[in-house]
Length: 110
Image (cartoon, rainbow, N blue to C red; front, side):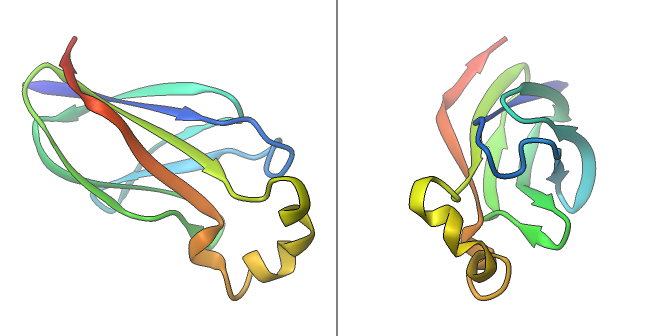
């Protein structure tokens, strides 16, 4: 049986015109644009999820989804306010801190 993952992307100045790739179990399954929420059908079971933009990847989240369940996530880049001036550091030394992905609530039936 299939399940769903829903990913909500925060809107921000950095990366506003670029999409993030959605990577499930090491394979790109789609993209998500600035300020959008996208849903993807996935098989029930254990998975890993992460996002990427160019060579930069978010943290990896391992999760399990049951049959006919929806699992929700939020993502954003961390270049907010004064941090935007740290862009060169985030693109080199702090690459692993550029994108944040987090699970937002317990699975629910859809």
